[in-house]
Amino acid sequence: MINMSEYASRRKELMQSIGPYGIVILPAALEVLRNGDAVYAFRQNSDFYYLTGFEEPDAVLVLLPKRKEGEYILFNRVRDRDHEIWDGPRAGQKGACKQFLADLAFPISELEKKLPELLLGRESIHYPLGINQAFDKLLMRALNSVRAKARSGLKAPVAVVDIAPSLHEMRLFKSPAEIAMMQKAVDITGHAHVRAMEACTPGIMEYQLEAEITHEFLCHGARAPAYNTIVGSGRNTCVLHYVNNNHKVKSGDLVLIDAGAEYQNYAADITRTFPANGRFTPEQAAIYDIVLTAQQAAIQSIKPGASWDKAQAIIAKIITMGLMEVGILKGRLDDLVKKEAYFPFYMHRSGHWLGLDVHDVGAYRIDSKWRSLEPGMVLTVEPGIYISSDIPGVHKRWHNIGVRIEDDVLVTRKACDVLSKHIPKKIMDIEALMAR
Ligand code: GLY
Ligand code: MN
Ligand code: MN
Image 1 (tube, helix red, strand yellow):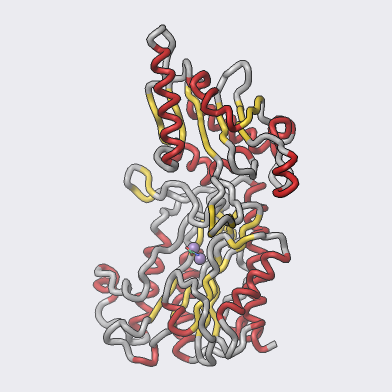
Image 2 (cartoon, rainbow, N blue to C red):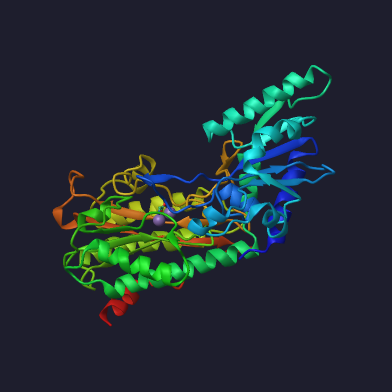
């Protein structure tokens, strides 16, 4: 658990960045119906969670820098014995102040009535623009009602500012407490990948391997995957976000598992590829080696000051060289890299930021230039080669070989720390593990 005082310092930092005349308004996630009256498991909005640590729906955070009566107001659900008998305890307004350190808390039903008075005298409204239409409307109604009062000399806000850039820049840099949560998510995920490799045997269904992954997540307190678990075998290894997971795994197939636990709302995102029967064929091993070499070289380049794009350039070059060596690409290396001849086989980027969201927030470019890496950023490095049988001109012995290797990497002061370094990925180690 992250300490409540850390949430308080995040709110303080955000208030400092918007200045003394701004107001921050941020709604919690909504409960979403799945079918009939059954709802999806509730997952808090990441921005809201980052600033509050509060995990109930039907809540709105308001920050009012320098307001004497209190800077942090939480609107949330009232305690209600009947509801709590069915759905469990609620913090209520008392809990919002005591446990979650709000200066003031009001029932969510009072939001619309109270919002105009909170807007009064503020110059700019900072909120997630255009994400939730009902909320956009509510806010504009409140703004208009303040404007009506403004005729009697009171000031209404004159600017509406998207809160995303400033808040997401904060989220991009992980604190030691956040890194500890992410390390835990990664460690649980590592055990899950090893468990799936150990359980794999020809004839098993892809969803049975997914069950091994889910089992390990739940047993260690990761209550959900950070994204839908991908278990693809054979030709399905070439489908980037394959989630049907309903085919039988055959001897001679590769199996690609892209799975990450979510722990205390922090994501891991890890991919391993292994042979269904425990032994790579020479063709599978050749492609695997190219991807692994590309990944290791890309990881080597990760350090403060390196451009975000560097890993991609390294991967593109090594994959092109590798595909030339095995005879799949023909031509001159520079020409092939320049015209992106690797693209039919490697069609995504080197990775993404990782944090509360699997594809985490934060700008990748600044003033249209790729940004430089800095300590505290966490990113994935995930090259892949996917040789789908419908790519023309490739000998069929390469068909349906899809390999991705994905690790989670923290940029440190001197270089980087691969959070997932303990999860086997060398051919030798995977084969030894599967032979046990
Ligand atoms: N698991 C999704 C991704 O690797 O980006
Ligand atoms: Mn990823
Ligand atoms: Mn992934």
